[in-house]
Image (cartoon, rainbow, N blue to C red; front, top):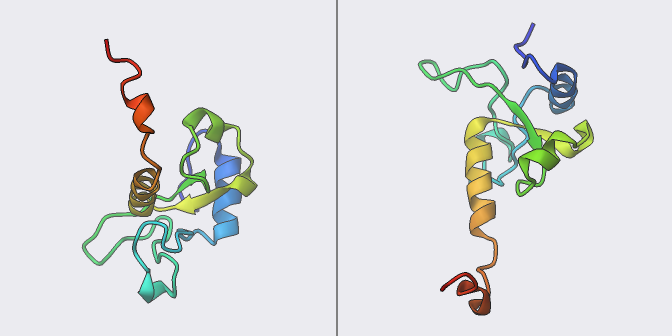
Length: 111
């Protein structure tokens, strides 16, 4: 039996089964995942390498800009399996690609 969270186990299991218990990142993290034919090779409860750490996948929103409150209400169809490395890198890249605040808003709260 694979590990699962204490809370939301049914939702987690549904997402993981749909993903085949494998990270669904296909390059959003900035890595082409060439060894995995374009998809991350990390699998739930497996190790990153012979002497590596154990991978615990998470069910997180497809849209990485979704707030935590909104993400808690999403159905399993709008979630995907992410390894922590891909999720962190993809979220960082997504936030970096957001347009900068317009110049007229920059001094909005200056006194």
